Image 1 (cartoon, rainbow, N blue to C red):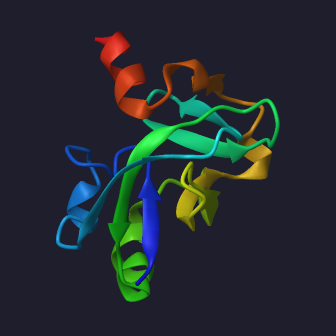
Image 2 (cartoon, helix red, strand yellow):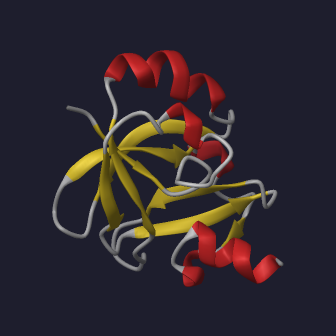
Length: 124
């Protein structure tokens, strides 16, 4: 079992959700309150662990085999993101996509929205 936290277009209804849709949905979740959340060109979000002073970000957790991550999920991820480890509010530690270090100062901080859907809804 590989738990994968999704907080952007991989979630239900998102553009890359078909890459994980066939795998068990384990539920909605929030990160521990240690992250900043960024919008990359309003196309997808990026998560950054900042420790104290961060916030919680809502998302979804799926049980995705590592082979699926390698062959289907990661190839569709944008170059600004990389696979990392994410701490959830309930104490679990799971995999998730994080913003690469060289990208962290270049994008709009949207942490106050608490999640990608809330941010996208205000754009409409």
